[in-house]
Amino acid sequence: MPLRTKTFVGLAIAAWLAAVVLAVLAAPILKPFGSALAAAALGAGGLYALFVYYPKFDPTGSTAWQGGRQDRRIAITFDDGPGPDTAAILDVLKTKGVKATFFFLGANAARLPDPVRRARDEGHAVGNHGFSHAKMHRMTGGVVEREVLSAEDAIGEISTAAGRKILRAPHGFKSLTLVCTLRRLGYTLVAWTAGVWDSDRPGAAVIVKRVKAAVRPGCILLLHDGDGTRPDADRSQTAAALKEIVDFCLSGGYKFATIPEIFDGRP
Ligand SMILES: [Zn+2]
Image (cartoon, rainbow, N blue to C red; front, top):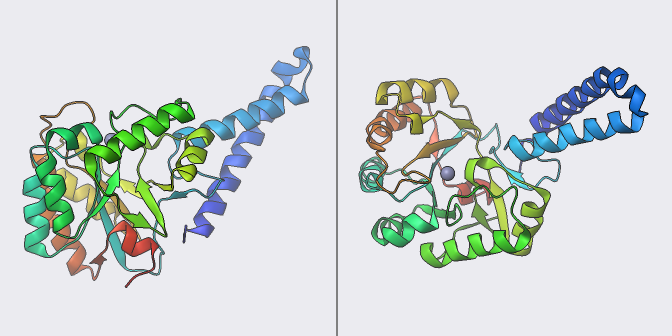
């Protein structure tokens, strides 16, 4: 997958430097206990924590979070749905002729199968966001497998990118167990380039303003059409902001693509 190698290397170097600085700072404190080894372990622990909690940082190369920067396309993605406002979001996308990617939650898809069917029928990509929205970074491989496959049962066919089904982990938290289990199940992780905290409901105008500041070529934009824990989530502000977001991007010469279109290298 065309991850942004340059930025990735920059992030890895920054993370490594941070780990080294942390290790050097901690060395005098750890000295009485013996050790450069403990400092090194601390540094390694810091790096692993960064991998777990920072969605874009993945030295295993398993996470897609950005399309090519030379590619003047944006992938709009929605998490946590379907919910009561998914239909309004689909209406805007239909009116504007825009295809997006929905990472549906299994529990919500089981309650509201119609918007899932509609999203698929209208040409949007459909991804897996787990069944219960439980964070996956502390799960065993067996529990991850149950979450992923039960969500798949509720959502139906999952879209693929570069030959692998797409999944976005709740909160973007990950672990080596998660990465390995997903690989075994034929999945790949998809994170995001920019989130705008639309789920905090700051008002449609603020959501639009944040998106305007964040978009750039190859951007994977994170929005929400549902909630991880409340099936009655109010995402009307996101729906209201969407038209202006699309108009702004189009006027800036951007086009829209789904996650599979971007990572399969399709025009
Ligand atoms: Zn979520």
